[in-house]
Length: 68
Image (cartoon, rainbow, N blue to C red; front, side):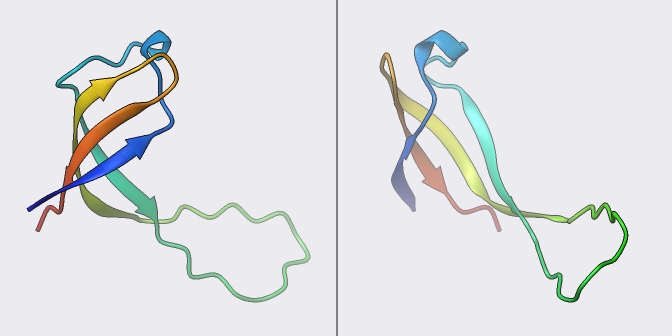
């Protein structure tokens, strides 16, 4: 099943109708207090695939489908 999503990208960034992207988020599970500078590399959690169906001067619209 495809859902519709609205993106904060625009034509001037080079996106075109039909472009495909993988949507993901960073998995963040950090607690505690740190006294030194610490760099974390979080694993990526895939949310799905995006396919652009419309591009405008300041926004784009895409279909989203979950990848299992």
